[in-house]
Structure formats: structure tokens, C-alpha cells
Image (cartoon, rainbow, N blue to C red; front, top):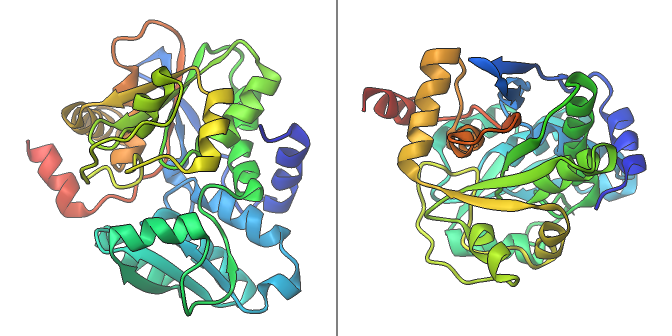
Amino acid sequence: MISLDQISRARERLGDDVLRTPLVPFLDERIWLKLENLQPIGSFKLRGALSAIRAASPAELAGGVVTASAGNMAQGVAWAARELGIRARIIAPESAPQTKLEAVERLGGEVIRVTHEVWWQTMVDRHYEGVDGLFVHPVEDEAVMAGNGTIGLELCEDLDAFDTVIIPWGGGGLTTGIASAVKALRPNVRIVTAEPETAAPLAASLPAGAPVEIEYAPSFVDGAGGRALLPTMWERARELVDEAVAVPLADVEAAVCQLAMRARIVAEGAGALALAAAQGREERIVCIVSGGNIDAAVLAGILAR
């Protein structure tokens, strides 16, 4: 668990450079949407990237920064690096959406495309051969998770009562941050994670009580799910997560459509996961709309179907 003190210090580091995103009802007041897709980079990742980079010393930043990302953390790191005038290099999987990579390059980041296996190993090793600089882990760094935790503070300040928070699970850094804040302030609130069914290691592992190997298949939900759990994040999940849900891809597409057509909200696959997982539940729910960086052609195809 990340302490409230760490999260409060992250909030101070972020200042007014991240948006205090709206928390709005979806159709009625049973489901609420936390709109992190409205951040300057279109994703919550700015909170963690900026928190971590601002927590580093000038000596640590002298060689620039490096991360491994399919696109959203890459944008956060590039945005923060541009602010400081330092170099940002991004190790990205070949399958990363072009929309996200083009945004990274507009922010001044240098993209190095690798296979999915090499990208995953870069996250595990926290290093890519031949590329030096401060490695900002997209998931495991406590300063990153503390930055994500500022979302949890805002939820508890902005909504008097809720029963459940549903959070897309990619590596676990968003869930750990939000859950740490919410569980500290409202211990009875349930934390539920959502993953695409084709890449849902936590949904398989949590009921088993141990990490479980899964059959992984990539999908348009590129910002959540994965081929396996990062070892350090399994222990955090066991401590903080009450339920893990694997969501059918058709349900995620339906949620993307609902958000676009009924609420005028553009969400990427990961950003729609929580709403998809909320369907059929009766309690008062907060859904984290984690990002809106979806390729136009993918969105058009979903809406057409």
C-alpha cells in the first residue's frame, strides 16, 4: 500500500499541472465516471510520470529519462521531460497504436520499437541495452503509484458516498495508487479491477491465490491487460483488490459506444473497461475512464458495428 503521506506529497509535486478531472454521473447517479481521458495527454499517466520525474534529483535526470510503454505512459514521460528540457526515450512494442506514438514524437520523445517480448522484458529488467537514463517504470515505481493515488483523494473529496471503484488493470500501478488512497479514507469501499478477457492474468490469479499462466492475445484494448503479472504487483493486488473481472471484448466495444453516443465521451478500450464491468451490478459505482487515446479508425469501426 502507498501511504497517504506519499500521495499527499505527490499532489504537491503535481501542483496545477494536472487537471482535477470531472466526476460525472452516467445516465443516473448509480454509476459515476472519473474522466481521466481529459488530462492534457488524454490519460491518467501524466500524474504518475510527472510525480516520479519531479521527485528525482538533477543528477538522476542528467542523462534523460527512459520508459517502456505502449503509448500513454510514454506521453506522460515525454511531456514531463519536455517541461524540464531533458531527453526522453521510449521502448514501445511494435503493436503500439500509431496515434499514441505520433503523440509521443510531437512531445519530443524518441520512440524505439521492439517486439512485445522485448518490451515486456524491458519492464521486468528496468533497462534496455544501449539506452541510458533514469528508468521511470510505468507501473512499479512508488512515486508513479503515489501520483496515481491523487485520483483516489479526489474521489473521496468529490463524492459523499460510493460502494465500489472499478479500475482498469494493466500492470497494477493505477489500481495500487487509487486503492491505497480509497482504502485509507473509506475502508469499506470495494476495489474491483477490469481486464480484457484475452489478457486477464489478475482475474485468473486472484481466485486461485497465486499467479496463474494465461493464454494471451492482443486486442484493441492496448492500455490494459497483459500476458502476465509483474511479480512485485501480485502482492499489492492481494492486499488491495477485492474482485477481478475479465471483460468480453464485445462488452468493451459496447461500452466505447455507450460513452461516445450517450455521454459524448471518447474512451480508448482500457478507458471503457470499467463501465463494461459495471453492467449488471446494483451498487453505487465509480468507473475510472483511464484514457481516450484511441485510433480514429478503431473508434470508427467500433461505432459502425
